[in-house]
Length: 302
Ligand code: EPU
Image (cartoon, rainbow, N blue to C red):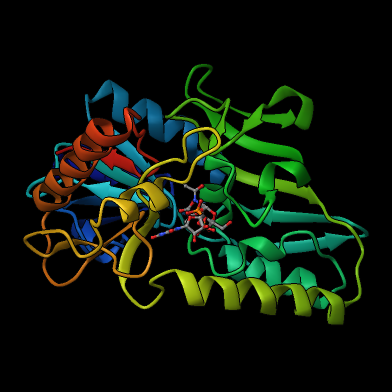
């Protein structure tokens, strides 16, 4: 979708929003899949309510993009524009055990920065690509921890009230790869309360998690992490593996040979290829195990 109305373009500049025409979502997602649309880069949180009003009044559909690491975007000319926050500088400010973090901050860099300041707890998420905002929205977790545990406060643009609100931890529910935020809420900033730990000790935890991840996940390949959520008490990856589906492919979309719940883009996979592979695997697991797998990856259909 192209924003060409000169009045809208002028207003975007006034709101301190950078307009980038025909951005390719394949360059903005870890799967390397997705068509093109206009990208609106937001430099100031405070302009969001006016920006969203502007888009709604002019019937411009939109979607919010975080780090693009858990996302499968449709092919071709996309029927909505994409909004993305520009990272503030500095993006992490520490105050005792509290870390004030910009939602656009890189998750891994945030964990390392806190670690160097003797703040731990997030070691399990080292190696997970994406932004802090994305991790927050999905309540990202690994190796027995989840980010929601450490959240004290979230600054969010709420689509329902069309306002920026600050929510305390007890006003948000964090479940397995799910939060009570609405799909069109936009994470802006978070305060995490992290336990004090000596850097050396945190580093040891980080090394162990890195090693586990390296040995079991296809880190060098284009993927969106795990495609399916784990149904209660079982591992989706193990079921897919037991069916002998590693390396199953549709075009260049392929079930990883390292971890069967990771589907990789082994070349120039299209969204259509990836969607067919997901549907095929889901059907086979349903047939053999009677289990209906739910997507973990977020899908933006064209
Ligand atoms: N397994 C297999 N074959 C496979 C994959 C896994 O037999 O191809 C077996 C493993 O050997 C292990 C069991 O299944 O006995 C569980 O595997 P793993 O420890 O890799 O964990 P998982 O349940 O597959 C979850 C998260 C990952 C997270 C890891 C580590 C989900 C959907 N996946 O995977 O998160 O990194 O635990 O904590 O919750 C993600 O969210 O994108 C993600 C990758």
